[in-house]
Length: 249
Image (cartoon, rainbow, N blue to C red):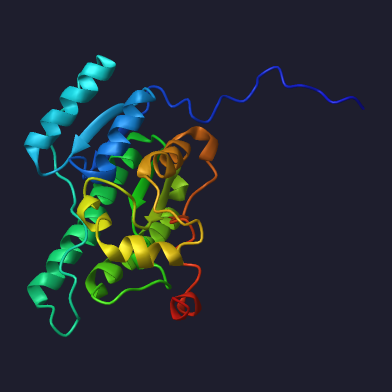
């Protein structure tokens, strides 16, 4: 039987024009990258963060680029803090890390999903975790942060399990170290250049655009409608080697 060509070719997965996307932590780092990349792709962006001056600058840049009005206020989440031994970490410092890195993500996911459920609209949540939350590649001083990101991974899977009936999908990304505004000073140190790169199979830290932005675009697009409850590890293989490769440095 001769092959038949569908009269309705698949839409390119990167065509996400008109999608409405809420980005938290949008004032710096990968949050900014997500906003700019998705705006270029035709998405309507709601940017949320704590630094309003940076949000206004971002919104102005997007408005100039797209000609579409963009809200310029909201609330977002922070990132790695208090890298200390668990014996030196105070209860207040522990709680601050969890408040930012886990509770904030959980509350945003909760209330966005409530709106999706009540509106009977399918949707997708993409939580940003970290390779620190995986069961390999841990570093000293990261007890609170790594524990909070492990919580993000578990939260994502359980919410995906429970909310699938409402056509709501949840996935998370676990990136490693990327070149960005936030990591610029760290990248200048000897450790990332002389030691860390030797343990990364692809021998690069890469940039969040396109490494993360392209994956976010796919997860937003309807072609990923069967993808839910997954943790996408984006780290150039950094967590693969483990102890043996360190012992050979």
